[in-house]
Image (cartoon, rainbow, N blue to C red):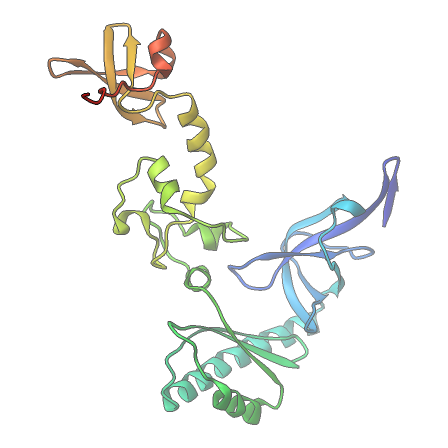
Length: 286
């Protein structure tokens, strides 16, 4: 714990338990750690080992995460050996569970398995289209490993994060690379970013709407606020016309001047009151 003129502060560190997973905050008071080292931490379920991903930072008490747990120690050489044996045990457990799933003809897809550092619990992660009765499977696993067994159904988004992959942009999937949490994504976000509403163009490998639609949405919404909408009459340096297309990233609009002539104009060159006037509608005949 540290003190300054603004009050009491606490040292915390970010820990990740899988190569591609969420980062959790832990109390790092009185522990010397650097980014990239392994550490033993107290979790709600028991002891676990993870890697320090963002070093130690200091936060005031009112900014601390809820139910903050502590880092027990920096991992020793013996701890690292135990961790390697646990990783091998996880692989074997996944293979055994897959065999039992097939033998019992269960409609579920096993994705991953985690073993606590002290081997007191095994957690199996799976996806499924419908509800699965896995009570007999749990009995098989308990009989085999004699530890606490947990089967947890996860989203297909989480499955994509675990397996990783390349997005249509040519880069590693955002969920695997830097996203800690999944934000809600809607078709409205795709519309506001002027994307073609083709499922193949706006969906990720998981089959759901691409995560980037959510975290890029605010930037697009802010940019569109200052752009005349399609259909509006505007005044350009070359005369009056009607907006037919927007290029949000370039901050330009395509304006039809009539007689089939179109020009691309930067938004800051749009002049006059017509810029923000709504398109006129025909009056109904009496």
